[in-house]
Length: 191
Ligand code: 5GP
Image 1 (cartoon, helix red, strand yellow):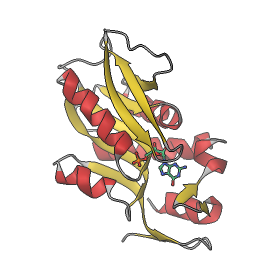
Image 2 (cartoon, protein in one colour):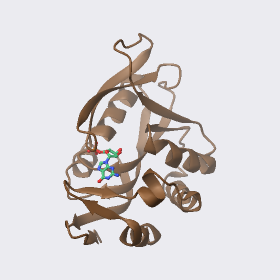
Image 3 (tube, protein in one colour):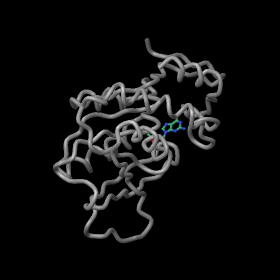
Image 4 (cartoon, protein in one colour):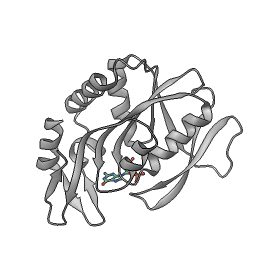
């Protein structure tokens, strides 16, 4: 998505450890008009796939998923990072290693909101090592639902997550695929 690549080049900042910060429009301040264009693009890609639910993870995924959902006219379910020591019985759960926080979270989703009859589109902000996406995929598999695919805003294609998940036969559509980034701020995209 040309518009997104241009925005990343204009406003993205590269931090040590291969972290791309896009806080001015996606991860801290949110440019809602811009997210609308992203939502439309996800609808263009997945609108004819019979999606009945969008699934994401807190926190940055929620805004993106909700705006996209306005085009699909379907509910959004988000996986929650479990804060209590105990995990309730009526939830699906998996562990996710957070790339940005260097922590492992238990994430949970109530069994009330995912079922085997669902056709699910996953939406998230970034795809890097793939831990977040794999965790969401595990939960959907546990629920017995169908995975239509994953819509990702920014994939760091030089990290392994995208290739591994596509190799499992899951459709992953990333609106911008970063081929490389350097500590002095140069960012290159895949063709
Ligand atoms: P993964 O599990 O694929 O390694 O990382 C995915 C999650 O980590 C995303 O949901 C996002 O929150 C965060 N993340 C990974 N890499 C980056 C990055 O370069 N920049 C930002 N802002 N978030 C990232």
